[in-house]
Amino acid sequence: MLPKTKSGAWLLKCTFTFLFLFNASAVNASPQQGEKTKDSNLSPKIFKMQKRAAIIDALLLDKLENTLPSLMRRSGIDMWVLISREYNEDPVLKTMLPATWINARRRTILVLFDNGKSVERYAVARYGVSNLFEKSWDKEKTPDQWQGLVGLIQSKNPKAIGINQSTHFALADGLTVTDKSEFVDALPSNLKSKVTSAENLAVAWLETRTAKEMQYYPALIKIGHNIIAKAFSNSVVKPGITSTDDVVWWLRNESRRLGLTNWFHPTVSIQRSDNESFDQLKAFSDRPAGQIIQRGDLLHVDFGVTYLRLNTDQQQHAYVLKAGETDAPDYLKQALKNGNRVQDIFTGEFALGRTGNEILKAAREKSITGGLKPAIYTHPIGYHGHAAGPTIGMWDAQGGVPVRGDYPLYENTAYSIELNAATFISQWNKEIRIMLEEEAFFDGKKVKYLDGRQTKFHLIK
Image (cartoon, rainbow, N blue to C red; front, side):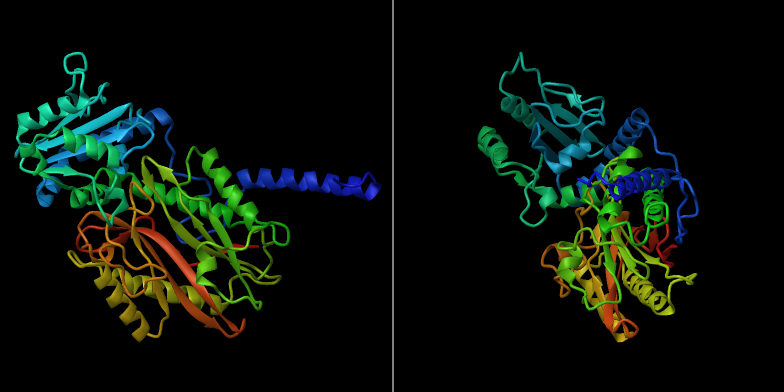
């Protein structure tokens, strides 16, 4: 509490004046310009909840009808059984629920059966699951839900019954021990032998992006870019006053104000001309909190939002201009170019059927031969931020990742192109890292950034 003195009253008045101006400018001022942040407002339009629900359900129906059949045939599974209880949902099942179902209800069982021409969709559940799945259990006639499920399975006589069980892909391991035990116990012996892991099918469903989804995904990426541009501007950052935590919480509040959610807590960090050396572990988990942003600082943000069941994961940099400067120093701009070169080399190695570990090895070798110092840790993105699919390096596993890194690249998949390039800055007498992350789509032939990438620093005056 401030002392009740003239100076204390003056300080209190200044504090409230700053907070008022800080919040007002954060809402109304336009951002500094990055490569893909040309709008002063946060366009494109963010839909209201009812419109979002209609879009989500339309995208889901399209994917169930037009994409799932080929994925089931590719995986060799003609029946897929997904089982969840309320508040403990299988990650895959949750992506198949209608938009108005925030969670499963009681025990919800979804059955997908490929009859060779189309995929039939059933809900062995107390409640109908919208018009997406046909209700196929009458509790009054068959009180035991498991027997209702077994009856449906027997009527279809599948060759392989896939369940979501996986040792290496967490998102494909959503069937709980209890549900699996009770399900298998209910099956007659001739069906027990048909039960198999649906790992490849679950990963395929999660990683595959449809043409209709891709009509909306670039807009989401632009929204994320615009929020970052505003955060890295004088509307939010006042050098010598604003802390990194202030920017972090502005990002959280701004996301909510726009009707978006964050799938992880943002981070904002500083590299500057001091005796502090870069620590990879601190860069990802142990960042110092509440550092005051000063002129001459190189800022970094890691930020992601969720909208229409899709996610962003973006990392960019800003430079805080010193008095008399109009641009970032050339040595920092060269460091950013080094990061862009690593991006180009890396995405140039994407090829259909190539594994994550193969891409990682080739990209690192080419980057190092070219005089760069890369670290690559790219992941799929879509329904989840760290999504299912090939893991292409981890920051602490640059030699490759067993099993998940051996998963191949398929067409129509999206990735967070996440990596960094280290550059020694003689003017600072230290090595810095340009840490970049941008969403891109792989169509089977080439990689395309969904809303460009950062090639110029955001500038804070």
